[in-house]
Amino acid sequence: MAMNHLMFTRSVLGLVAATSMLVLSACGGGSDSSSSGSSDKDASASESSSASADPSADAAGGPDLSGIPDVVAEVNGEEVTKDEFVPIYEAAFQQAAAQAQTSGQAPDEEALRQETADNLISAELLAQEAETRGIEVSDGEIDAELTRLAEENQLPSAEELLAAIEKNGVSEEQARSQVETQLLVEQLVEDEDGGQGPTEKELRAIYDQAKQQAAAQEGGQKIPPFDQVRDQIEEQAKTEQVSKVANALVQDLRKDADITINL
Image 1 (cartoon, one colour):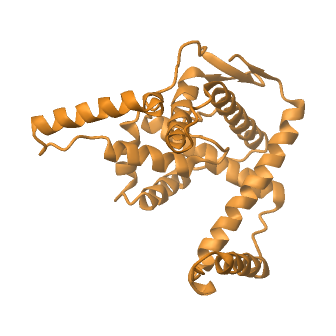
Image 2 (image 1 turned 120 degrees about the vertical axis):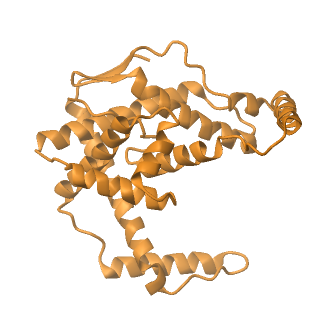
């Protein structure tokens, strides 16, 4: 059975970034009940005026969803549906629209559609390969990851995280399925490369390079001692390794895959 991929954004392993964006949107989207009616009207008028003056603000209202088929793609007989596609496409569009306010260049909706479909196809291929290798994820592992994500987003519990995500149209079942998919992919990558983490020498090299880059910048930004940032460097190195191995695996899986894109 195909996994849901409702929170992948611009990379195969984009769950954390997508979750953060959804949570920030959910927590910041409500109105302040203490505001007066006139203040609300003033804010609405200001937003309307700003949107009229700035084309990128109109784009930020949302992408054109017309013409998106019920089945966006098929991967080895498994469907990637419109319901899976739309939330990710909308998130990618909002990010592109925000960047457009700086660059002045409107989002390329066609390119974003293709990129979103491509990411979902990659995620499906990895999930299928994990299933083929007999890799499984327990409910306890999913619960632990949800708790970690809640802490990362400064929320008191996994329940609060799921409630915030649900306000953006992603159900608890969908969110848990997406976490399961990410954990499957991480275990798949570990199975693929033997689970070898970065060595102490490699971590030191990354740190030294960061120090050199900081020193070369104007103002000479000060970098904390290695011991204070070691865990962060290790996490970054592991993330980059997962991405590298996953991308290579996807390229290999695509060679023999039966993929149809209906966009």
